[in-house]
Length: 259
Image 1 (cartoon, rainbow, N blue to C red):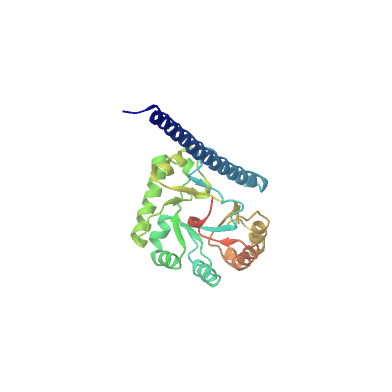
Image 2 (image 1 turned 90 degrees about the vertical axis):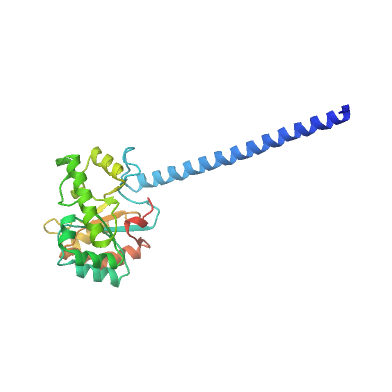
């Protein structure tokens, strides 16, 4: 049988437990709130930095799928090479990249991969990332979503057959896409890669010096630099790499980019 003294101590003990539980709850909630505020602050700072640097941001529907650039304070840069032709200069490009210990991302068309399997293997064996540029270089907005899906999956199958590697990033030809393309990539488990600095090396008059000028005037911290296997691009590449590294930027393949 409990006595008044026992009941008094029991009440104090229960009250102490309630106070302790309340203190723990408040502490956990405060920690959670601090983490949320800190994360929000980081996101706001990154967004503000992107705006200050003139970096194009994504629409809400593109977030998590489309990659235009990395974080502007990442101290990283991606060299992205779209390949649907140019096999005659790729060996020289590979040598320059190897000599400078640089790894890049090649987006290859399925038809090119099918016609150049040994060169594709060499690119991959040199440590470069291989991703999809569609099969026949068809513009996404000028074709049905079924056609674009077929372009992606056919390329995926060809590269998988040659390298044993499954692609998961699609670079739409000419950067041409719309919301249906974004939705398709999401459904297929793909990211979509674009760029923030363009060599425009396919344009007439694009000499090595012109190409270097176009790129080196850009904000390059977090940049994705688009190029193609062109002779003048290959000539420009050693100086571009030297200048980029001189800005204390690490050249990385796309899969390593912080964004």
